[in-house]
Amino acid sequence: MALLDILVAPHPTLAKRAEEVTEVTDEIRQTLNDMLETMYKAPGIGLAANQVGILKRLVVIDVSNPEEEEPKPYKFINPVIIESSDDSSVYQEGCLSVPTFYEEVERPAEVTVEYLDETGTKQTLKAEGLLATCIQHEIDHLEGTLFVDHLSKLKKGMIVKKLTKLKKQGAFNKKQDTHTL
Ligand code: GNR
Ligand code: NI
Image (cartoon, rainbow, N blue to C red):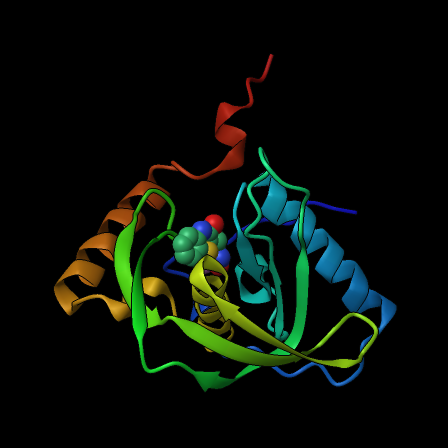
């Protein structure tokens, strides 16, 4: 297991389309486990491979409440939304690659997703609520899309400008809070 570095926008890898996984190997399973560890540590409820600099169609999600339930990790390989509900829901979204910014995004309330599990078996999952929102947020990442791309040009521009400034100041460098002797 290993912790991976999470990229912060604007970054070219976050804007690229991730490639389909052609074979579910031990390396893929290892990457999924590292992504889960990285997601729990952050902490976040989802993570797409683009966010850790890997352009493969891999997503991990766990929307369970750590204070009230057992962990419920999902691992998705090559996820595809095959059905979306007509009714939508609005969630205040955040993103580990857009730290400190939260905005409302409207998306279909229910989605059905097809994917390969870590054994390479095809699975179908129908999701609603936060899980449905998170699945769509993560599949967006695989297409190079961030939640800020769903906002007005003005709002997105403002957030990207502030992120650029914060990055320049080293605000998200993990070494920042490590004191050297
Ligand atoms: O941790 C996360 N929380 C979240 C909240 C609302 C909608 C989507 C998310 S996903 C986000 C983690 C992340 O950046 N995944 O890509
Ligand atoms: Ni995200």
